[in-house]
Image (cartoon, rainbow, N blue to C red; front, side, top):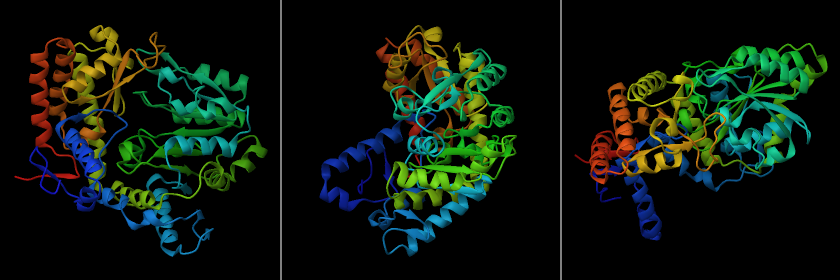
Length: 447
């Protein structure tokens, strides 16, 4: 990479020692940078970090153990780790208007497990979104650890053509089953939830209102989508990658008491910060990765800028145009469109193929998406009916609404011409040409 990539691009961060010590790993890294540079990333849970975030991940903080929390560590030599984590906490609290923030969770899955561990006993009930209606694997899939230890029950859409949640049914289930957590969160839900209604239902039964906003955390931070903490939620989790454009990690955020008719529950909720910190460490993990905490702090500073807010607005605008352009080209979109950064295409109805085949075809032309279940999908999870697309990553590269119209044309053309090798190669070259004009942030053009 010190000599430049074959595409006429060069990484901004040089890695001469990696190249010298392990040429094999270096070549794999070089090929991955080529792949990212030559193709278009439409997986809505992926994004590109800035050069500053990437530099932060490779620092000497990697060397330091820091079990515990600022001022309460188990090892010596913690002056700078305390200063760093305290800074990240304050930035997270300010950005999300939270009273407490935990920045140590290693991922969204670990953060969700910590929240369950803090609030539930084995066998307790959680009411969350149906997985095929847009919920996430960590919201109670039977194969997960949480799914085996707690009882998860489901709510879903009243009508998949619009995406409206059946809130009356949600309230009826909550009153009947008395869950200890009502979970608002999604992985493939293109619409906006009524956070106020969900929080009201939770208060009515003395449940914890928890939001998993991993996908839209950056959009919430920028103020372009609603913040559940502003609508009565006790707790919110977001990953720090995805739309927040940070490293792999998670934030657990909480706000002060939300009035509840059940005073005993209210007193317990007051202890949320302590319960969460204890659940993260030593509950589900050991010491934090302080190099990642450094990168999170950098990403949080970037997210507080006017430039990031403009980026978030463009993410939503691009999503709207991409969704409308796909519909105009004959695609069937679950819920008929999107209110956020993602959309779900029913590949079976649109093109007569399953989502796995659609993903493979688009991969062949340099457009990366992921196969995804659709509501009440008749096909199995590994070969589902849909594909999921999103705009955070392409917007980071500077793609605008005109590019979204072009993307919709390429996607539909490739899937319709999936048996035509010549046409697919033509689309692949066009995708690469556009991609190389808009490098990923960690790469610069040599010309």
